[in-house]
Length: 322
Picture 1: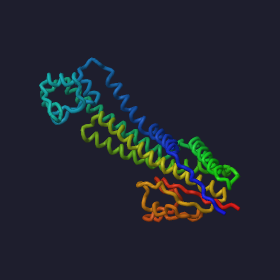
Picture 2: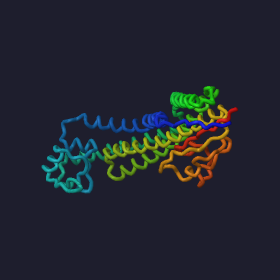
Picture 3: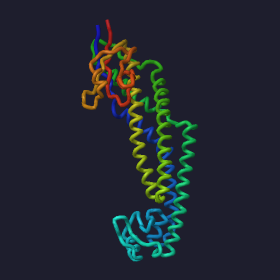
Picture 4: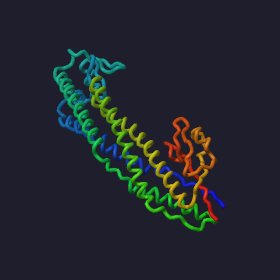
């Protein structure tokens, strides 16, 4: 005789656990050190309060002069000073010929240019060091606690599912060695993925820092682009985490179901518009754990529910019993 159990659910919190570890690594390895350099520079810049608002803004890198135009951040004090010099406000900024700028401010512009070049070189050098460290150093991400949290919840789901089936009186135990295997697998997979992603981010940032220097070298824009790309990095971390958590859940399902005597399962999609066409064609069909179906016809990839990237499908195990 056979019975089909309800599937184990991949909760959003599982992805969140993995994502938090990855985001923390990226923040501590790349973005916090870079923003620390910029913040330290701003602190040194703002120590002297004896100069005018325009002088301070130029040195701070929030006010920039090029091709006869002041651009940047204009507060009331800066705007008053520039107008007092004879600058005219336009859509592009405050226009003022170089020969009408006071000598002291010309010195500030020269100093700002020098500081900007030094700051950009420091950031570039730091990125180079980060790249070397990522290539040779361990990430320190073990995911041990993460796997414990996820598998404890999955095991609880499994016990409740089996308990609800009167024909299966024996409550399942976690297969021996499964947890350690999952820890090793998730750590290895995430380490490879996040290192690759971190190196890609460093290369992107290196190009953007050089581009910023070649296009005026404004330090406020440098800070903005680093902050903005951290947002991109976190979205990438979410994608990587979804893949890693999906693999873990899928592997837990397969091993646990086989330990219960299951040799087959029913493919079950999320039954919404987001389901990819390849998986919609698999919905409701029976497959063997030993022979996964083609889950991506374009590449020929074979896998069980959850094995493909961003797959939300589940497996309803078929249990054989006498």
